[in-house]
Length: 256
Ligand code: PGA
Image: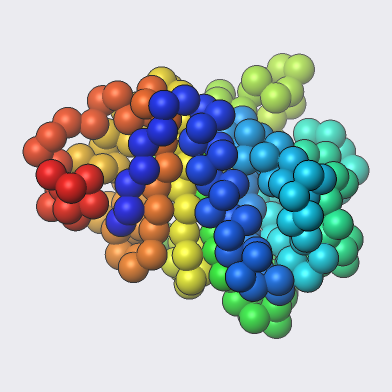
């Protein structure tokens, strides 16, 4: 696990964007799973800037939403497809047919989840999953619990997630209670993983994640310890509670 700590949100976002842009330049038919939320906004702004000012092209890029609320229409401003369209796709030259989202309105959701896995496979598999992290340790909407769902699936959101996401809705009652998310196995099959965590409110969960290399379904992001190509990018606020000595892998990555 490679760990990068940047001074602030903008620098952490620029770092994430430059790692993504580097992959796109190396591989114009790059396939990525992309997150939503407050964290990746700066990264998408910087990727947009690189497209507009530095010729970074998304023409051959294929993107998959990491998650989407159950029943959400792609043109609903509260939805995650809309979010990616609004904050990234419409500003760059990505082909609309290469932007995928889970079919969260399908009559048979389980079958739709399998189709999503197949679409990822048909695209050649994920070159990268770009991830945020929830205060409860989720990646995608893989919430803490007794077990790990490997593939794309419908999931109940935890109370903590519903509360955290209420800020995007006019009231907490409007936050959907369920979502479809790619599974932890889907994420782990990506060749490269980038986890971006910013702000003080992520300090506790990042200290828990990086303070021990133990894998537990109580902290879904801990599966990242099993992947051979993970870069964790934080700003100083998100890294502020990480104590040393930490897990051996962290110490090695941090050069301790
Ligand atoms: P946030 O969400 O970026 O809005 O904090 C992160 C997440 O829940 O994955």
